[in-house]
Picture: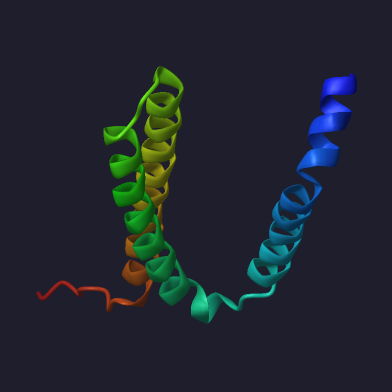
Length: 104
């Protein structure tokens, strides 16, 4: 228990920034209108693409198995985000296409 308390005390500023970013991100995303969802998803996909590149570099220059594991996890989740984002964006764009009518 003392290790946890000393860790929290030592990294309190970093923990504060992470918690603040979580709350701020949730509030921003919760108030986004549906019309802006597709452009924001495209931007998030671009950011996740940059994360994939950074994670590949990080895992490539790893000095221990922990670094490889962290890089691999980052690659996995960023790739999952990109693929899911493209799937959602594609589905939303399909809703705006005109339906084809059959000719008799």
